[in-house]
Length: 217
Image (cartoon, rainbow, N blue to C red; front, side, top):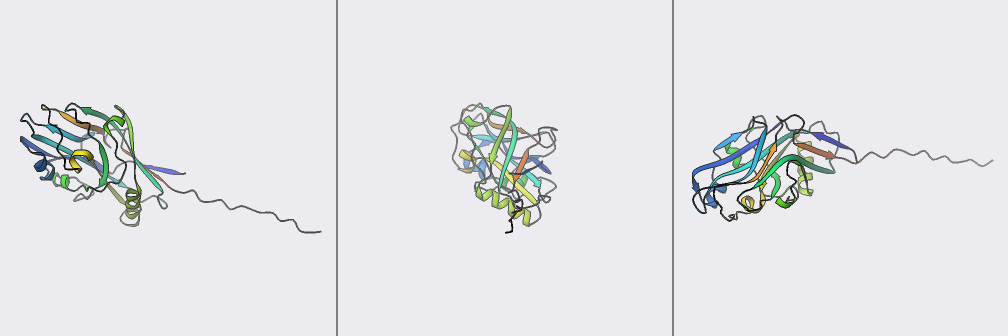
């Protein structure tokens, strides 16, 4: 099956920073406070506060791809990230792709923290299945593939969000641990040779066959 690879036109992280600590419901539903789309890495994950059952940072990431040059209907799609994983809180976070609706296609703002959906666009990668300091791949599901084709039929921009699934999206508080981080850092588009890679597949065109028919003598 032929494939075409794309690197992001824009990527980065948006997060909510609560220096005094917040309960889980507040930090997942609150407004974003910070954003970064210029450094060469981005994060998705959770940082616990020094106060029991409080949390001081929650990170989400957004990746935009200009796929307008793709020649035909997409039949399969995947996203590959080179990442490092951490679980210092010991909560085994997992991760999934979702729709992102940032305010702009050429910039990310703190408010985009709240612009990532909750309908799964891919498989969920469990913490135990993540390969540390290596490439990891999410396969888009039928909903994600339909979204890719919708983007192709529209403005040609695919907008992906990456969130923690089992705590952030599930709105289920992790077991608290002393101040630490559990999540992933992945290389962003600024890291040459390690850019987040979107791979789109399509069905190969059938080659016409010539059938020779012998005439009767």
